[in-house]
Figure (tube, rainbow, N blue to C red):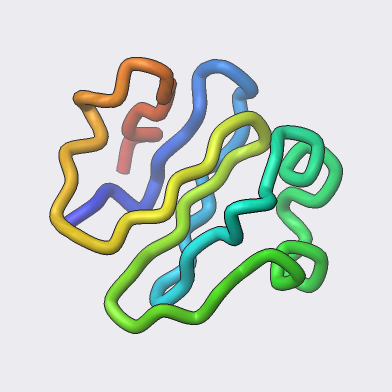
Length: 83
C-alpha cells in the first residue's frame, strides 16, 4: 500500500502515480520538468507493465514492480501530503 497523497518537498509538487506502467529508461529530469502533470505528454515515455507502478513529480521518478520501501531511498524527498 502506498499513500496516494505523496508530495515532493524538493520541488513542492504532487507525486503522480500510474498503475500498470513503468518509465522508459530514456526519461530524464528535463522530461518531467517540462511535462508534469500533462498525462498526454507523459504517455510518450510510459511502458505498459501489469502489476507495476510509475511514480513522478517534477524532479524525481521511480518505476516499481515489486514490494519496495521508498523510505530507504535517500534521494527521494517524498512525504505524505496528509489525508
